[in-house]
Amino acid sequence: MEQSKITQVFGITPTQLKEDILSDVRAELKQFSKNFQPVKPTEYLTRKEAAKILKVSLVTLTDWNKKGILNPYRLGNLIRYKRTELEQALIRINNQNQ
Image (tube, rainbow, N blue to C red; front, side, top):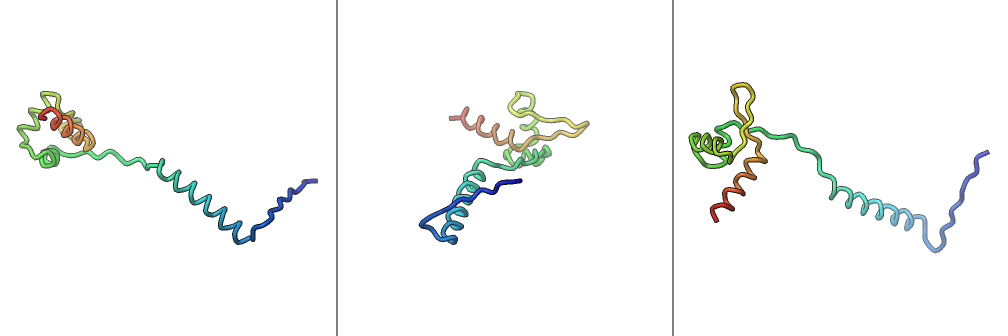
């Protein structure tokens, strides 16, 4: 035979108890959502798109590849760049020029 447990609460109405519980649950969910970030898929850009973002010519882009400033990814004959790596390269370039 299963025993049931009884919890008695004094000095609070059922509505107040419900609101207190909901308030605490909302606060916990809000805290959890701050720490949770969905994973974004990696965005690959073409040479033209990368050059446009960096505001440089395709020749400069090729030069930066050879110097190791940028890290191109080859897919057969195609060359692609990760957007996040382009943003990091911009930061490095700006820091070197200061």
